[in-house]
Image (cartoon, rainbow, N blue to C red; front, side, top):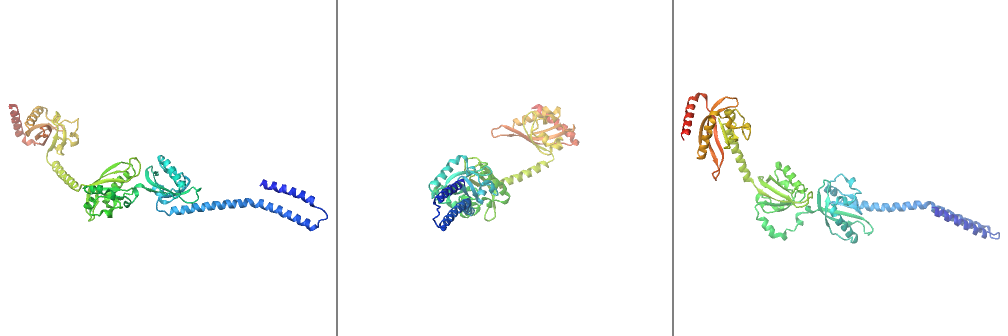
Length: 464
């Protein structure tokens, strides 16, 4: 502004000097008036230009800003209408991110936090150099459509391998406005994978009895072998690109989903789980699912490969064994007496006793089983301990059953006569593993006969 004022003053001085020398009396007055009018118009024009110049400058700047803003809004509209993850970047700064972009990063509803953020914040530090190369290639060749595999950082800390592309939004080579798009490496549809070139492997895999599968990060089938059809009657073609969870029994889905998700997110490298698959006819099939992720980096999202083995017969057998064990347990615990298994040590340490031990000894099973502070030998009457021990050892050494009548001291301090029958349990090599048998109490009304029997047993053992 000061330059314009200075110029006006200088011009005015020059004009006055010229006008003063030019002003003579013999010139008509109209000429003088015209000269003064021209000078006044010149001065007013200069003043007017000085006044409106800032306004014109601001308007031009505003028009340029509106032009840039319109281009940015147009770019935002384009990216928002894309179904794939996309963002508008100005240089390395994010100007806009569509819903799919935010969803993949786990930042849905957090659009304000990502605006203005450097794109390097969501790219693994190890891939920053590759990102710079991608920007450089796009700047040099605006028609370049190549993608680059980069690791994208998600909000939860997981790593998402993705194919990233960069497209200029303006033909102006000086513009830094680009459209950045990416797609998960493991999210491509099965049709994008060329399994035809792997026909030999395909034939080999189809001969495997187990179901072989490959899941993408959405838990959808990317590959299935023919055993899938054999077990469930669903065709492979109809099952591809469908979620594994849709074929799992509703009661088993939460566990299966949690295990598969942990593999996809890279929180674990492998997993084994038993679950039920529902066939086309509605029948359920028990399978053992063994799976692992396809990445070597912890925390990196990846696809999942694995097998499913039919274990329906094993589950039926297990159920039958459980029923048999339940029946046996019921019979044992309702038998009037004490069924046991013990070691052949100096304490006759119990490994198992039935509930009947309470009626015989007064002790609970948990007090007698694997308890170093309890010794069955200690509750045998002191006068009967040696003869009882010797009788058992003699019969066991001969691998014969033993029959005993002796006295014990119950928990309440009462002396009780008991009858025991048992035998040694031997390995195939003849090694003694344990003693198993049955002990029951004898009523006091039978004491005369008991004494005679015990004396006879004592005499027989002594004679031998």
